[in-house]
Image 1: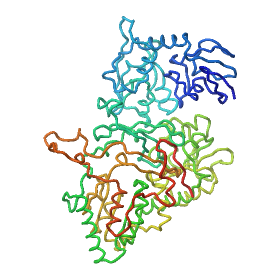
Image 2: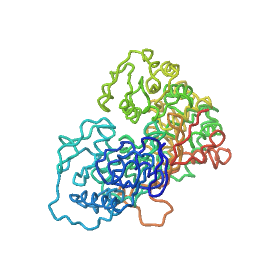
Image 3: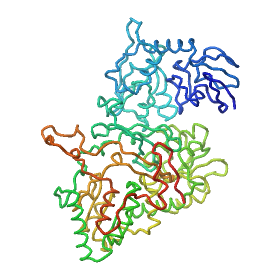
Image 4: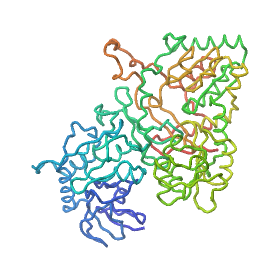
Length: 632
C-alpha cells in the first residue's frame, strides 16, 4: 500500500486510490465537480488541482486523475494550486447566468460553494454570455442548460451507469449541450438521479420547484417504502407537505442512487383524501370515543358470535414496531385469526422464501453488482425492485453474464437498462458451476413455492423480491405465531369482525364481514368500508423500522409533523385562528401507539417499548448506518 503525504499529513491507501480520495481519508476536501464516487474520474472540470512538491510526480496535477504513489508529497494549499483553481472557477463562471436567487439548487450547489471558497467575487468578463434553449424533459425534471459547467456527470450516469439511450451530449467547444435530440419525457426509470448528480442547477426537481430553500427543509434519514429493497432516502418536507425525496448513500444497500418511483411518489402522503380524524359510523369523533366504541362493539361481537370470530390483520407495509404488537392484541381481543398478509398465496410464498434465507446465502444489491453471473427467474425487476435492475446493469458492465428463465426474453429489461440477456427454458439449464460469484434473483409475486425452493437448492446467493418494505419481518412473525388464513376464515363464515392495520384487503373479502375496523393513512378499500376508522401516520411522520428483503433492519426517522399541508388548505375554509395543540388534520397516531392503546384498553399491560425479546437489539439502530442483518 503506497504511503504519501498530503498537507503534512501522512496517509496510507490501497493501490489504485487517487490523491483526491486519499485526501478525503484524512479529512482534506479538494474541490471537484466531475468526480463522483460511483462514476469515477474523467478529469473534465480541472478544479481539483493540487501541487506535487516531491516524489515520482511533480508540479500541478489533477488530483482525481492522479493515482497515489509511494513517497508523494502533495500540497492542496500551495499558492500555484490555489491560483489554478481560482482561474478554473472564473472561466466556469464566464457564461453562467449567476441566477442563484431563482435557482432551486441555491443552498446546496457545489458551484456556489467552490466559487466562494476559491475567492472569485468580482466578475471581470464583460462580453456576451453564451445562451442555450432549455428542453422539456417530462413532468419531474426541470432543465436549465445555461447553468451547465460541462462536468459530464449527467451523461456518465444516464448512459454509462443507468444504460439510458435517449439523453446525451451534443455539440463541441462552447456549444456543448446536454439533452435529447427532441424534447420529451426521459425514458429511464432512474432519470431522477440527474437531480442529485448534477453539481449545479441544470437539473432540478420540478415537482418541488420554487417551494423552499435547502435551509428551509425538514428532513431526516429514512427508508423507501415502495418495494422490499429498503433503499436509503432523505425525504424533504415543508409546511407539513412532502416536497421531494433525495437519494441517500448506503453502501450496503443502494449505494448512491434511487429509482424514480422512490423519488417522485409523494402524492399519497399529501393526499387530501387521507384519513385525518377518527370516524365512527362515518361521524368524526375523538380518539377516546373511537377506541371506546371499538372495545364496546368488539365485546358485543364476541358475545354474539363467540370467541375466535375476530381477525387481526397486519401487512408488509406496517412498520416493525406495530407488527410485533399484533399477536399481543390478538390475544387480548380473543381473536381467532392473526394474519400479516391479506393474500394467503402471497403470504405463503413470502414465508417460504424467508425460511430459506440465511446470512450466508442472502444476497444484497452490492452482491448483485459484484456478481459474475446473474440469473433472473419469475421476477419483473422493473416492477418488483427497480434498483435491482440497476444493480444487474453494473454487474453486466463488469463482464457478468445475464440469464432469464422463461419470460419474454428480457426485452423490456434489456431495452431499459441496456444489457444483453440470454434466455433459458429452465433454472436447471443455468450454467452456475462455470462462475465464481453467481446470484439468482427470484420474485415471490407470481412464483410457485416449488420455484422458490428450487432457487435455494442451487446453493448460490439469492435475492428474493418481496411484497412490501417490511415483508421479511411479517413473514418471520407469521412463522413464529402460526398465523391463519384470512380468506379461509371469511369463506367459512367464522370471521365476523376484522381489525386491520395498514392492510390492503380486497373489497370482495370485506363484503360479508359485519364489523370492520381500519387503521391506516391511505384511503384504502378497508378504510372506505369500515365502521370505525383510526387515522395513522405515514412513514415520514414517525420513527420506525423496516426489514428489507435481505433481512436487513434499518431505522427511519420522522421527517415532518402530521397535518394538512398548508398548500392544500382552501383559504375560504381555513380553520379559524385559534390556539391549538396540533395543526389541522394532525390528530393522527403511529399504528404502534394505536395498537398499544387498544391492548391497554382490553386489559393488557401498558407497552412503552414494542421492540423486546429477539427484537431488543434493534432499539439503538443508527438511522444513518447500514442497518443490521437479523437472520436467526
